[in-house]
Length: 381
Image (spheres, rainbow, N blue to C red):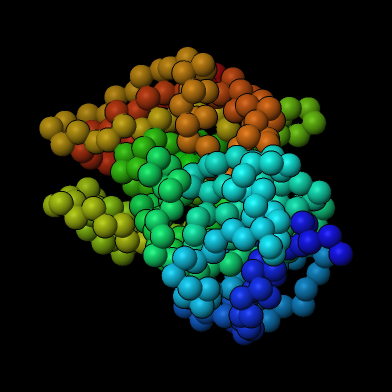
């Protein structure tokens, strides 16, 4: 048998004689079908239950053709202090990853990505390895190891959502990876930003970390908008180049003082040097209408950090070319270079179909909803 294209996760476990039975299992009924996470770590299953809180879940689920099965092997330091290190003697794909030979290869957000002969691999030196087959989009293997060797790619770019550290791996880090793999397997494009809906109209809120995306989105939800996403906005185009957005609905994370209810949202504005993010668990009744829902995008808001010295919000219209450049920088695609043309087309279509603004936030939540309603009225005239 040709060993070049063996599944590298299976090859790694076999070569290192690591027995890792996956005794923990939970299935979430997501918008695109069931997703089952199997692992040997109860903490990971518990964290997944918290993350995908808004979606129906089952401890055991009969697998169907539509089920995306994600197998996570947490091996700790069983592979030694070097972690997951390439060895061409077993699974030559590692050699190709390191030497950039026959496979297409791309370095993105601290991962190396390679594909060839239907096999796709993501490797984050030296603690995470992911493998799946392009023609079988219902099974993913993730290997997680402890490593004392720092990732050389993490100096420039990091795979992180909501401030999660890259090294060493932790539970939120693995869950973030699972989110992005779910999005990749269903062939969506993803923007790092929140999204809200009003009837069939979608509004995207994006910007740098800490700009106020989650707080602004929740202020709009409090005033009657629907929360599509706190962090990951999915983009889809059809054959007629019609574009629509939806979200992967995760509990919102807020900087500053912990908030337990929407009515107390203003408390989060006073950080007092507390920049730790804590979740705001919304009642399922509030988000129920947002599950499995697509909206037509009409407005894109590029948020800028609130200025403490002012309570006035300021909207500044920007051209579609500027909006395109800004959105491209907010891409969260682990395989960017191999879908570049389609991704560019999707972002062009999105920015050309929307009215875009810079939104300079004041240090208040007052009149945000009124401002967005005005934008919608101008757009739909």
